[in-house]
Length: 175
Image (cartoon, rainbow, N blue to C red; front, top):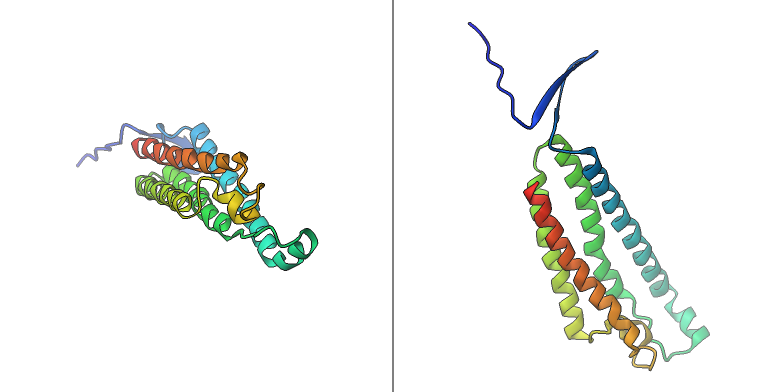
């Protein structure tokens, strides 16, 4: 009886010294490397921001004794808002690994899609709880520095980044 070998159109088989190796022609190394780099960048930035937030929170009394009590130095909202960015970086690494293996990468794309909506919800909550310059008010209090217009940019940047995560996850699910 003859054996018929049916191959997926996206898979290619090559002969090596160790035997046959199958790989996906659709997964280009450049896009996987970009996803890994982008995930690593998100992890590094979020860990730096979280570390600075924790250091300021732990040494809050010492810092206030040096600069005065007019600044609130409440960095916990900044800590909480970087958690989705850290999770996005970790999930992007898992997505890249699963995409190479051609297993459950679309499920991870769906999880990243949900995470984008969660991060968008968090920033909208922060804007409604404090104001659009929540970062300035939470760190510098109700001073003129805390109400500076420059602190609008982190909120706007985070909203744009959350929408980008949602858009990028839709692209990842279509691959």
